Length: 236
Length: 108
Image 1: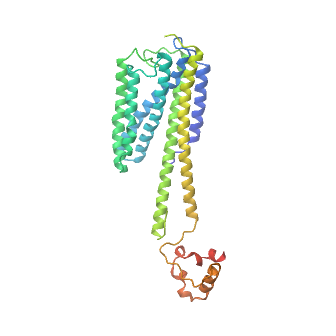
Image 2: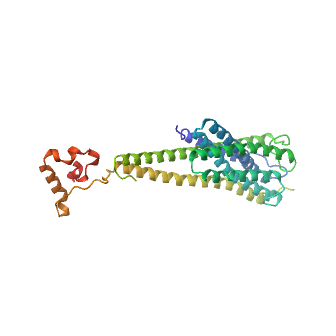
Image 3: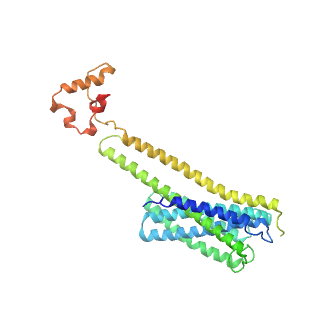
């Protein structure tokens, strides 16, 4: 299986969508009445948050596929989805803090449920990699990581719903019943969401291609060493 | 809360977008380092597969020539005068034959 197939097309598509999204954000979308120019942060912050949470859930779904089939490729996909979501998560936390500083005058507010809940999810997933790499046996590692990914993946939507139900008026809502985005803003937001989604897909594909190539190289080296040992010579 | 003036809000907005691009850039840089390491390993593997391997554990042929510059020529001559059945290449596979008796070595 070649993971690199279609990577160039996907990369070009991602770059083009980002260019369109940035053009819409800065030249098309109107200024918001209350927050003014500062609201432009939402076009990158909210899509990052949505995509990263979806990535965590996707990691859980891939983990279920791994537990059902025991095929290592599903474990790799689960790992890559969670790994990329964590990277996007760093972006969410930093851009959110920047917005909070501009809007509320504080970098972080501990009594804001949306912020704290996202931080909890992020910290939960931050333990995924230490857990994964503390187990040496590859099969056990994949199995334990999958169980973690499924459990944490189920926690994400529950956490999201609980926070949304409990704090309808605290955190600004971009989507849902309380949102009244005008068409131009909704279009810009939609394109930004697609751009971040494509970025996530591209980075996942890059990571999987690199991992697959590294695995193949390792197998090649092992095979060569075995051949040399069989022929009674020194290997590496 | 009133909206921040453009010159002040602009810093925050620029900061947020720069952070996102910096994250992607750092990721791409890490991937580039990994890729160059992989390329180096691949090159190493290719070089090893092309290079003829030295025999291991096989004892070297005893050569009764003292002068280093005459070693190969004398060894070839001595090999030519040896009876065919006792020649090492007749009993040993090509891959494990010592370097001095290989055709490319005698040419050099």
